Image (cartoon, rainbow, N blue to C red; front, side):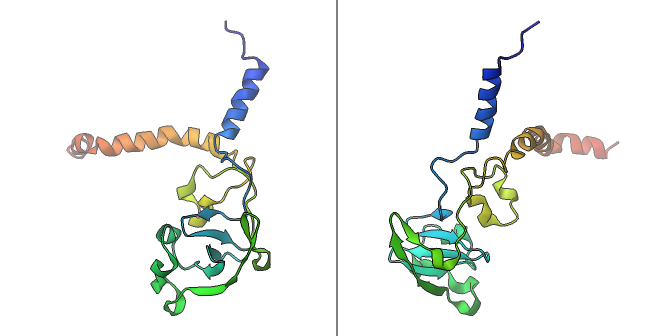
Length: 169
């Protein structure tokens, strides 16, 4: 009979699971950054894009996947009301970041990104980091869902073999 794991090994395993979703660095006021701008989320659900010159654009109407890596002139305004991206104002530099206090920006609350980013209700939320304690439920859920997902994938891949047999019964 094997002796149980020492408490130190159990604690290290728990910390490893908790740290699995942790992103490096402290929580930030912005949730995404590309080569042209930083993206902030305000309290009312808008997405604000701050250009390198401090111009603040309301890009809530533009999907983040499309806005990523595009300059201000390349942003598609067809998604927005009136066919134009609204310029909300200008931000002043505050150290390494922009001063967005006048716009009600909600900073990130932790260091963990969600494991189930594709299942997020708001696709922009999968870029924001939250508290690791709030994400703790995702680890056992991922462990439970992995065999189910593997079974579905294997079933779909082998359907040309077993589906005719099942239908010819």
